[in-house]
Image (spheres, rainbow, N blue to C red):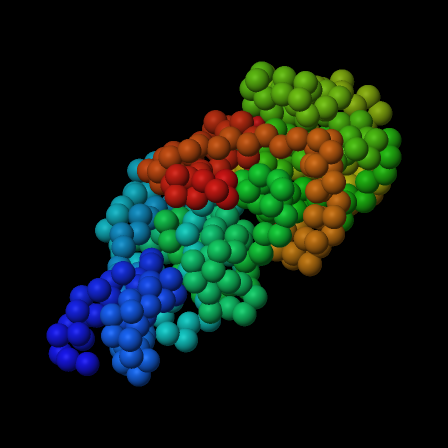
Length: 425
Ligand SMILES: NC(=O)c1ccc[n+]([C@@H]2O[C@H](COP(=O)([O-])OP(=O)(O)OC[C@H]3O[C@@H](n4cnc5c(N)ncnc54)[C@H](OP(=O)(O)O)[C@@H]3O)[C@@H](O)[C@H]2O)c1
């Protein structure tokens, strides 16, 4: 074989590639061509070897350059908390959205975490408590000024160093408010296995909010059929579920919410027996509750605390149960301005059980919860109101602070960059 032959074969070699892979079709064609032209089997073998070695080398070089490309740093948009927020309402201006940070879309060598692309971000009242300069909740680390906020979300695994997660998996759990996150403790993420329901549900009904409703109602309140249940912030992420769980059990259910639209939804869409706008009741809350519960309340699911809790205590029945889930009315005020509870003596007089809980202590019940709730979702017996803002991270600060004025109608979420992930969403 002359040098000219080799040059000719190398010149023709690109035909044997198809999408960066050696094309057997191309190889066979080249070899048949060589056989016809040279009628020499040994030469044919040489040519075959040269083609294969050449193809493998080129493919290898292409793969390497592809890998380098994917290791490139990309811009990583983030929501940053400027400074701690203490004893006042948070403002949009307490956060800023920036694209200054970059991230390598490749796990560092030997890293045991996961690299994720965040798809849905959940706005939760607990995030307000993490803005404080004191650590108020042990289960969550406080925010560090000049760093991205963290929060619950639904994400897609881009690369994993964890044995139970792999590229392409969908997960929900605690992530950061940024486009891509490197999660150091992937054991805190839960793999999404049921994809016949909307993916967004894993940031709400099938995520932390749903489990909170389940645990608070069933584990803390020990409910029985026919009991009388009152729920505050009843149209929110947690409250709307507690009401529906209670109705499915056969309870009488009343909810309070902050607008006529929410009150109508509670009665017309979510099946509550009664609902009222607490903002219209002013100081008459005690009397209002007496109207809706002439024989008293068996179960109070408390999402707001303050004067609502005080009015409820007076209206509780003997041996009533109160699940202290949250006290959102008190998150933005200091101790001096907080609404003291005057009627705590009722707990003794009526032998009431008042118990606080943190959903993180009940993660072991998650599978039980899925077994309970998924059939209801699939049968359409439970509906979930979601307030999903679609767009870019720039909207996130305003959505978060909107929770404290009741701007959200149902579970507040942010879905962003859906175009890239349309197939999952
Ligand atoms: N213990 C746990 O593990 C756990 C887990 C999840 C959530 N939580 C708590 O559960 C509660 C509900 O959370 P969520 O995620 O379901 O939030 P959400 O109800 O979806 O959103 C918060 C709602 O609270 C109401 N609200 C705001 N400020 C209020 C005030 N001063 N007085 C009365 N209502 C007020 C607003 O609704 P209106 O328009 O009706 O006023 C707002 O839409 C919160 O307190 C949260 O911290 C606790």
